[in-house]
Length: 159
Length: 206
Image 1: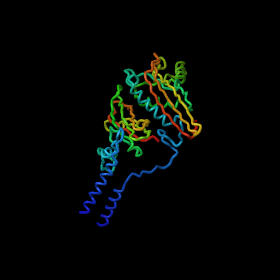
Image 2: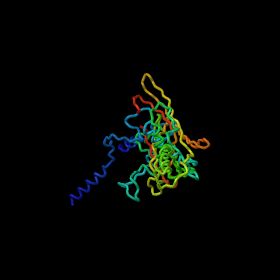
Image 3: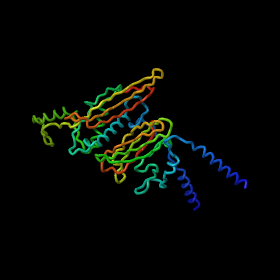
Image 4: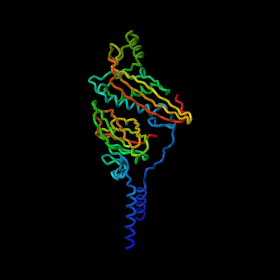
């Protein structure tokens, strides 16, 4: 019985500690635990045709933070793609700096064709200055027109 | 049978332990020109040139008058009207050459490129052909060299500041690209690339 009480007391203590971490932060508030929970895992050991890729964190039509140093500092608010009047594709993404410090990051985009093969060379790294607790917008245009069907954005800290 | 079981178990154990060998590669003198190298200062560097030309190329292709005209326009991209007024020592051709080559490879017929910097070379060959010194070659004779519809212009400017106590230098660099209509003078497209860098190291650009 004592053991049950001890266990319950322990759980209550952990819950209290968890409560202490719920500090109210000014906007924007980034739920990093939620982002981590959304990451999906694939069990395959290597890339094979018509099989899911083991590159778990880099799905198409998304922004992937590829740098460990800023993984829990940035929040990708959204990413959209649209056709320009000339038929090229423009990818636009809003990146939020969740920290109280300025951050310099850079991003690049790879565009893909219908077969999910790269349709052109990857874009050059584009710098983005993020003041503390602000967001900035990253955008990139494709070179190709109708051949472009998918995209993938990589994001890392500028060094 | 027991040995086989042991080997299978060992293999399973090893595969379960496999992780990314997250260590640096073999050192080399080659560096990635698209990112910051070991020698870094406050001026325009390779990663800036690669980034700015890539940005401008993609942006031009999204401009309907350049990238989606009914008749592909003749464009001239060279350093003739691309001036450097900054404190950075720089060969302007590095920027305009990369932009022209990148754009021509990417445009795939959406624009036509006139090599005005080769005008003297073409003129000399045409004269020899007209004089009968050499034959016509395979291409049909043209009435004249191609004229340009649009030509690249631009300016590089900078603003320098220095802390005399710490010796730290900061430089803001701004690079403006403009495409001008060669009949009306209208600027049909423009792009800007800017950055500020601060450093204490004494890098010399040559």
